[in-house]
Image 1 (tube, rainbow, N blue to C red):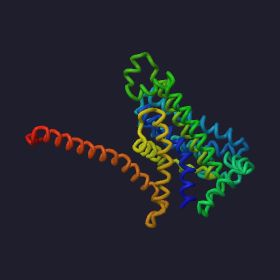
Image 2 (spheres, rainbow, N blue to C red; image 1 turned 60 degrees about the vertical axis):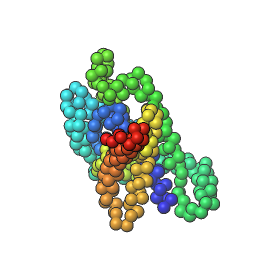
Image 3 (cartoon, rainbow, N blue to C red; image 1 turned 30 degrees about the vertical axis):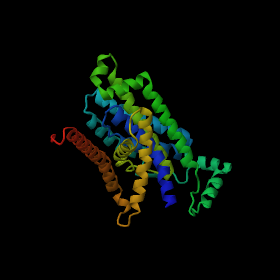
Image 4 (cartoon, rainbow, N blue to C red; image 1 turned 120 degrees about the vertical axis):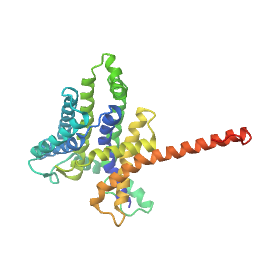
Length: 330
């Protein structure tokens, strides 16, 4: 059980980067961007082909980030300059990226198991420090038998994800970031202030897909392969992370909202891991589990809010009835 939960947290932290990208478009820009399913694979494909061809893993990962940014900018251009509906622009780009990703990979699946990836480099460096033995020794004292082979990925990815979160928070508080947030709230108002909403939207969608592609590149290296179909349903996973995080942690400030997204991504992976341990569920049911989680995350808070409102009204009615000597009834 511990190893399963550890793996869920490990992958959840990487997926959190993708969830932050989805948050930028769906919550900040109010842009329903479906490019995510394609740009996620683009990141994995660019990183994989770069690594296989001898390019250092870190450079290949940066190339993946750039490729995602370009894909997002094209989606933004289709919507702003081409006047294509936002939803349709994302669908068109997602469809085009399937063929582009297949061209990049040269085959449906490209393995990186025998290649040096970012995580293999990290593991070789980490093993020399000796932190794993100390942490596993502490867990052994607590009675946990099956222990992770390395803590390098989860610890370093937590740090990387938090850094990305802090940079995102800072960016959204700058003049350009405030303009992006204003576009999501009231595009007509920000346009009346002579702001170039088209360019801001293009950059915002580009940054969003850059984060998505970065997550895809890291997930590909974590799993040891890039597959042309690995991005199917990523937008739903991203939305599930955002919705779960917002429901549990709230969104009063930008810093709290981005932290909620990261927490939501980790909790989502833990829920899926626990759900797959149920006997009658199989690995192929993962998409169904995701859909059910999203439905509960959407409907649950609304049901709770309705019940809370009914309870508040009932209490108010009882107070008025007590004040009027039982004459009040509504």
